[in-house]
Length: 445
Image 1 (spheres, one colour):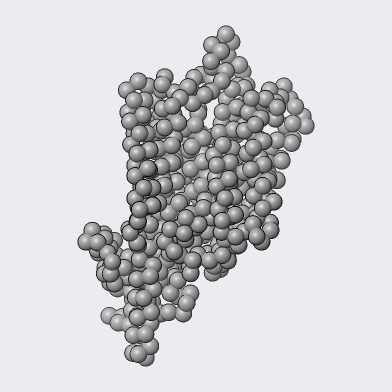
Image 2 (spheres, one colour):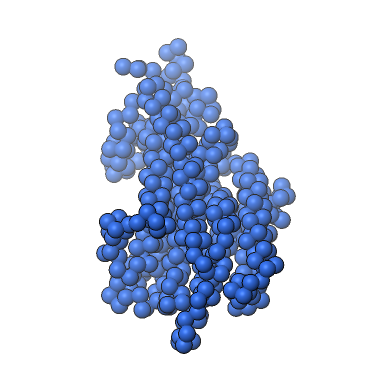
């Protein structure tokens, strides 16, 4: 019995050394430098916005929302990947998801954190955000959104941190190839973890409870976000389809984000042994399914109002189908949704490189899809304002807006990058259990 335990510990330590965080390398340093430059530039642009006000943007009485809100909806959408991979696939006992769970959880936490920051950026007076909590009214969908975003952030963070505790303790115990500051972080975050059976019982039970809790909250966060639009009378938003439409698109975007992250992590850190072609194949099939569901809701969203062509809807739909936004609209439909289905439905298309290229198309297409949901609708108000300046009837984001929006995306990527540098991105103890290695401590005292 003692010999078996020693063999398991040796295997576990070997696995730990293999999956411990690695140095960035030259490519990683360049990547972090670029992200910091974009982030710093965006911060300077935001300081300029604070000093001059929202007049530096191209938002006016017609386009009162712009790429900031498009970014917010994008971040909320991509954050749903945490519930898709960590919760839904876990509760359905999909064992192959193990190497992908932490990737999905990091994406979710980074995205939802910057979703909240993006709302602050969109405010002309960010110091007044406290009024949302002091004077928030339950009749307003905005207060629902604030509450559900905060709840989702807390649950997602716990779902990321709890399974990480045993891995942090293992990294601390191995003490190999770790900097002094790593060891200090590991010691503090390990929370006196001893690997006891009772501790694993608590962690596993907590993870299962959180996995169940996060599903309705995840569905709620994007449904409530859709209600911010759907509870108005504006053409293009006045839809009972919006909740399911937003949720299905969010799951598709999340799956694409995980595939892109899988490819980059596997390539940069030589993780072919753990993130296999089989994972790309399964995620590709999942993305096809989610794309088909989203395609169905897209058809519902546009076909029904196009058939009726009510006066208010006609101008909005014409701008999408044949007008100013037609090139963007049809590019998003084809490259962001139809082409992924046509490529990934074949086995060769689900290989790592083709899957990565398609996932980038999905991500980019999804961002522009959110832009199309927000902007063209605002340019066709339910009750048009009379005698307005011609510039109000169009929206072209200023360089400050583009820079600030890019910096929020860079910030989310930076959080993910630094996490991968400090913590193991592939779950060690779950991988060990999957390989039949016992991870519980021999001493239960």
